[in-house]
Length: 64
Image (cartoon, rainbow, N blue to C red; front, side):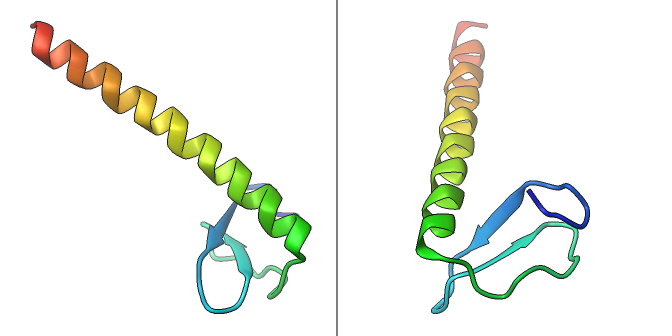
């Protein structure tokens, strides 16, 4: 969670481990390995939820 705007933190995969939120506010430039793992796990959870939504939508379109 971004401490400035309370938006969910997104991981930006770059050569260095960095983090920031989607609003563009400033955030720490580097994160610890434990923080990166936590952010990646949260990102994976978001991706899995998105995939479930896509699967449901495909099923709806095929049925009707």
